[in-house]
Structures are given as structure tokens and as C-alpha cells.
Amino acid sequence: MPSSEKVRVSCVHCGATNNYPLDAARKTVVCGRCKNPLPTPGTVVEPPPGSIYNWLYSASLPILLDFYSPTCGPCMMMHPLVERLAKRRAGEIMVVRLNTDQNPELSASFGIQAVPTFVVVFKGAERGRISGAMPEADFSLWVASRT
Image (tube, rainbow, N blue to C red; front, top):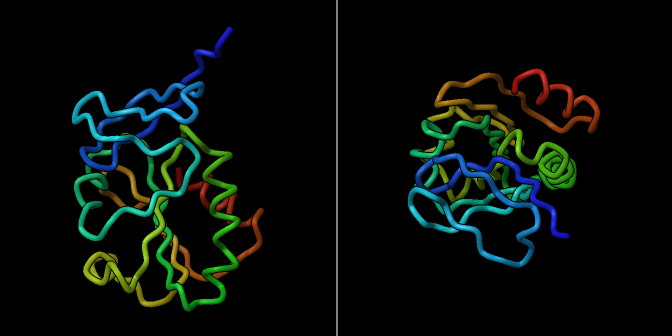
């Protein structure tokens, strides 16, 4: 008998919160509002430049923004930690990875001066930020305290 367990996912396009069935492996699940494909729960989303602004203000789940540069060693060290956190907190938060080289306007609007920088946003309001690489336990506790 298939599982009917669902987790919440915010649509990257319109910000609507949807219940994503966990038994929908290898199927495309679409947003109930705008009919665009939803990100798979527990994945780190890498949206194209300019598409995140609406989502930041309308998503009903907290969003962890991971500002990074592909040439930054500490950023690359943090990627596996961020991916594990996204899987553990699926349905509770959305995790977005933003390349500062491809998103200079968004990076500037957040005042990003160093990478990696992590920012937790909920309904357009910043709940916290931290810069630099750190141990996984410290990072997880910091995110938990802001979401």
C-alpha cells in the first residue's frame, strides 16, 4: 500500500505552499496555484537570476539562502552540510543556493560582502545571518534557532 505522507513545499514561481506527496518519486508534482513544477522536498533549489524576489515575500515556509561563489573553498566545504540540512528539514524550510556571480543584484540587496553567507528569511523579513564555514552541528543549531 503506497504511503500518503506529505510535506510542505513552497512554489519557487508564485510562493504558494503545497503539500507534496512523498510517494511521488520520479513524477512531476505541480503547484496547485500556478501549475509550475515544484521542487522535490529536501533538495537545495538553485533558481535562475531574478526569479526569487516574489518567493521571498510570499512563501509560508522559512527560506535559508546560501550565498556562495564557485571559486570559494569554504563555500564548497559547506555545500554537503547544507544539502544534509535540507534533507533533514524537508517540509519545514526551503533551502536556496545563490551564486553571487550570477545574482549580483540580489547579493547587493542583501548586503553580501563575504561568502559563504547564510541568511534566513521568512515572509520577506530577515531572521538572521551568519558568514563563514562552520561545523555541521553549529550550523544546524544556528538554522534551528532562526526558523
